[in-house]
Length: 277
Image (cartoon, rainbow, N blue to C red; front, side, top):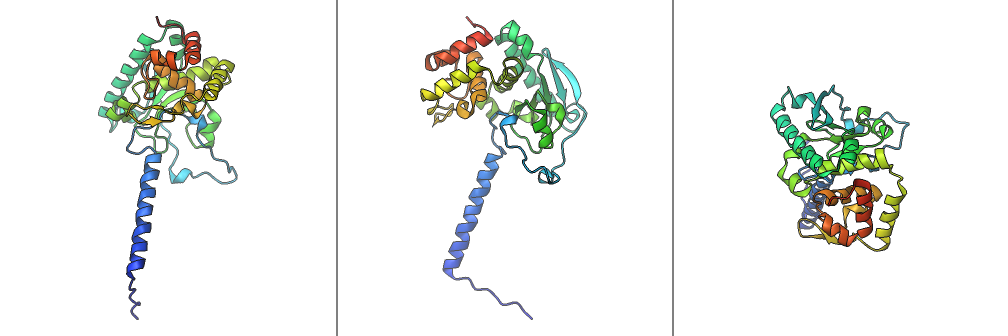
């Protein structure tokens, strides 16, 4: 027996087209939120949501955990653990470009950061891979527990993680985050040297919020936005470190502007990193 043919009214067709379009827009939004196709904001892994239901076997969206034996390299005084696929595998050319650009980042840091804090920064290890299936933004991993709970390699703990090697030579990434490696190393310094509970960093951060600073600032694109530094005191410190030594993508972009806009933070960074004049 043939199935009955459905005849849609003009109204129902319009409704269906409306909801299809709404779903398309939602899909675009979720894609952007995941960082696909756009330069990702550097993040601190510990501040991302962790799994909360430990009673179920984790499937992590059906994506198997990433595990490989990295190759160890010394680059500009830093120990870097490299995905073998970037050295002798299918992505060797990508790896050469990425490691060259990583060396460029580290060379600039060596030139800009005074000797004593530089020596501490060079104790922080880095980990670079071709393309992590679930982590997109470059990040620092302070917590081994967070890594285990979320199905990631626990060897990433206390390392700067370059999750997508191609981001290092992306034009979009360079325009937006020219000091992204410095940003992630600043997180490591905050964690391993100062401590994330450093009272002075927290005090100056709370003071800036009370003064209404960073609520509406100029972005490198010309837009007025809320500064990423207001995420928490950890991002406040890392974002300001970019401006103190080099250039940030949010105003204050450089050290002179930081000194004028948030003098208390500028003075604290001078104490932590050392004067630059």
